[in-house]
Image 1 (cartoon, helix red, strand yellow):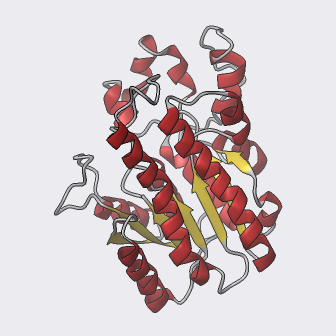
Image 2 (cartoon, rainbow, N blue to C red; image 1 turned 120 degrees about the vertical axis):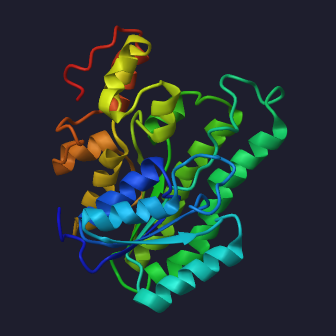
Length: 304
């Protein structure tokens, strides 16, 4: 997809690591100018206290063929988001792609813990990070995106609308957060569609993020070593896979047909023909329903 997005300007909000970094890099590989935001910089770490930095993401975007611009920002602070959008307007005069990938909740949710036992402060903080940040960013960024027809907004979540409707996701707070983001895309589609833009919700599958690889004690080069402990991890995918999904959507002149849809990296790979870095096409959400949730032994045959 080299050069397909040349001249386009993207904002990937929440791009320090994980899906956000993968999306930013693939937009860069397609030729876009990509503003990447987050709270972890080379000078200061966020509450995550992890080594990945915003500047590293910007460098990867540039190395991939685009132009990466790192702008530290806390998307819970409206003034910082307003200043970010004003800078994009001043420097580029346009915004074609907005990716709302702000999250920050890995250390805040408790698996299978009912709401009355879950730490309340952590749960409420999770909701603010997952929901308020997206609303604040859309509020400030969408007037610039709507200045030209054909803009694309991608709300990144965990789970498709169909899957999340029928499955309890981790905990009260996590479930609410991920469902809310799905609904944000639906609401935005009604507000943006008549004004010439498109909004979608997008979920990766089982993501081999930096945090997930570390949790399993592996790295990208030997990730399959984790299958002995977690066999269903065989369906996992790199962050670049969902990045290629966003790049494919952004390059599609008929993307408006997806307006309001809940999409997945695996589903879009089938439609657009892209692959993960290893040449495979993992279809995690179909696998979860038909294999993992069905209690069958791990077998990715026909699913990647």
